Length: 337
Image (cartoon, rainbow, N blue to C red):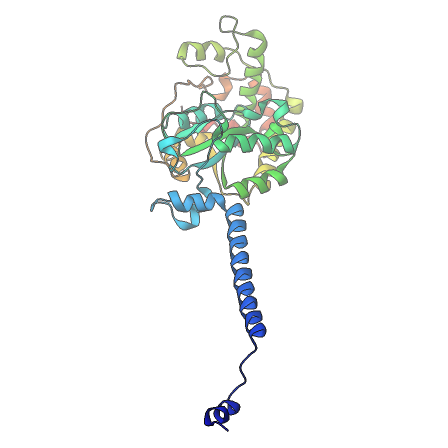
């Protein structure tokens, strides 16, 4: 026997050609399977985190990683952001009540070149008739497809709206909280500490809707001292039989709102703070992560006089509130002219 045949008989048998091809095909199928799963995983990740990937492309060093969920790079369908496409945008909502200074506060924010606030978009019933219409409206707004006079040529860095408590936000709070947290929307709560002054302002505003004291025109906000003095001449007579109940309802609505939305990123601001604390507006700008600058408004306050000069039946109101948990509202020391 040939010596080479003896050596070959001692080693491992050579695999038949069909078996060899089977193993090659099996390895190829395994590699394809791994590659397919990797591509599928990446596509899913891209679908779920498309905005995060865009943020990675546009991210600036000044944006901390832990704040990326609050930074957005919207792609409007109605126009192109152009050179602003990589300007990060933070979404916000001002949550407030009527006659709490929210209109004035919004004009202050709007004086900042990088902040756009779009007013009470939910004052229309069709936009808040159910949770679906509310979320559709918010989607359009936060995609920057909400084109109003609030739109700016400057690169917007903070974009939001004003939402009153009587415009569906409390009735749908669970779904709205979930949406705001998922969307990375920050809340600025703006209320009044002195709810008695708020009641006075509401009654005076309601009166002017019918009286139209300014040349037959109703104005909720004025831009001159002359107009303010005309509207301030009206002194409402408060119904003392329902006054305490009305104040309790206002304060309960505020408490319920803060409880419902406590899981969101938010700050609490009071009207009196803006008037009496020069740092209040700086804190708001820091909260929105925009450059801090002086903010201005053309609006003029209407009711600037002490409380006894604003209420027709002051003695009755004073007597009603003295000795109650609302007696502190009679003290005007929390308000600076």
